[in-house]
Length: 287
Image 1 (cartoon, rainbow, N blue to C red):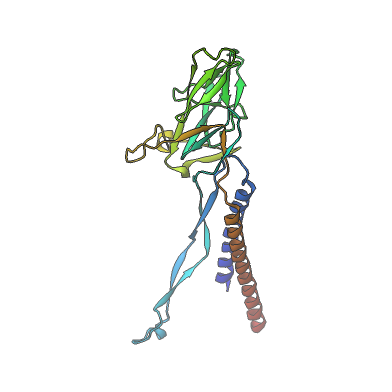
Image 2 (cartoon, rainbow, N blue to C red):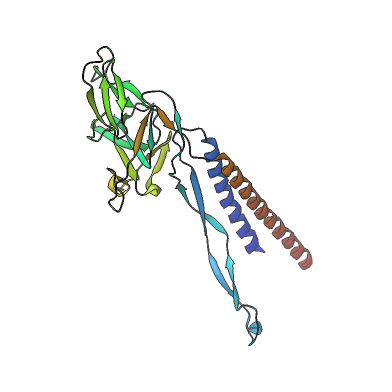
């Protein structure tokens, strides 16, 4: 009876964690570039309960023993990188990735020793804007809403001269055009760096739909520059200016998962209640 109660209690805890994952997905159904999370489970401990010698007779069809489990636990939470639908915004600084790549953002700060540090982070949210840099007053920098600048393939920011209009082609090349002089040649502003995610399980959420890498994990082991897969075949991440990728959460699927998990939680709670009733009966008989 203690075994059945413990097993049910552990399963209830796992179902609660699954509910939290589903709730987080549903809360981000309208978040730009959000990738749904999927929970997986594993057995905590499984033991083999042998039949008593009295029942181990020749010719019996009953099994020699049975597997005894102590419930399940949350084995991990994986990120689903399936692209979400694209929505037109008409904003020249909005950029969507039609592929499995991520943008690289850079947060620049000064550490306790007075050293300048560039911290990289990654996102699918292409709702960028043109921000100012006091050290470079003649240019605007393509950056996130928090002010983290977008890294180019040359590891430099994407700079747009003040008053110029920017254009982005499918391969991420950014050009700037002076609207006051349409006949003037376009200026090259850089190429937006897009990296392919090789091992999404290493991406850690750091808030605001952005991801970082764990300490001690090299970016080259998780992300891949360029447009080739593991077999050397070309993989093209097409960029679309004036579009934003929406969340890849399917609300109907999440609602179905929610009802399934609620029923499993309810079943485990009934198992706890039944075990408690059996323990009360045993105590009454013994008393």
